[in-house]
Image (cartoon, rainbow, N blue to C red):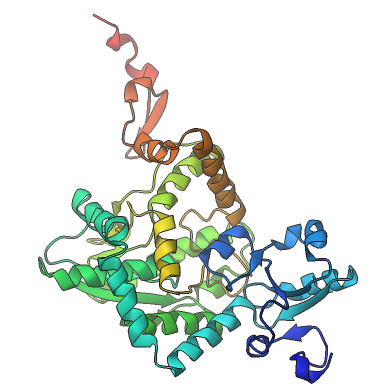
Length: 395
């Protein structure tokens, strides 16, 4: 390949800047991350073919020039080699999705579009997405009594679409000024790669969210843990957030879990944990006295968050872990992406025959009939239906 075609000397790699010079429609963008990562954000016009399915997709790629990318350019090289061995003209996008995203953000800032982007994102919350985002956000706050007068809330931002939307919704709530409360927009850097941290900082600047960043060494601490490192990472991150929030004078931390997280957690608990439980809208901390966790997006649907993101041309990271190309460390339960994706697909299949299945799953933990439950736990104490079975004979 010649230099005029934008390919470096090895003939296998193209940068995001070089890709801009390629003729539109002359190549096919292939995102080899898992479906969840792709759904969180991807290059425009990219098709999602997870790396494990590339071999089956060879007929689809035959005769085409494929530009392959992953999260940070770590897994795509091997995929490109496999495709080239199979006769596919394939190229590796250097730096992956993260490098492309940083370039897109830099281009946007260079032409002065940041102010317009923020204004449009805020206006869409007030108008186009008022009912689906703002109404459900405020309904959860009222229904579950999540925000009270005098609260100082640490809005915890991971860098993903959910927490960034939550920050903008809280800013809007503050703008209404119906009762006094304070906000701190808190970002913990547990050992992010330079690219991931820069994406978070860029998005905060573009959306005018005044973040407070503090650092920890959590990623390094869990790197050599073989059993459930993502679960341990999630728990450690929670503890660090509580600690920093309390240090800043906050009495609450707000996390960005949404409605779909809730129903998926219910099914995952049943199918993988052999238990019935849910993700609560608020919790008292057991280790940090006087602290509380709240989930203001509890009634907000993930699809509506994605629609807001896409309508405003926003791009976020899914998981900022620097050790893996995709991971689930941002998930409280520490379950793998494959399990969560399996549950998502199961719910979608059930919806084909029952369009109310999601609401039914959500409502199921509000309508528990203890008279028909074999056993349950309350405050750590196990209760069994035989405990008072004879005393409950029909009169």
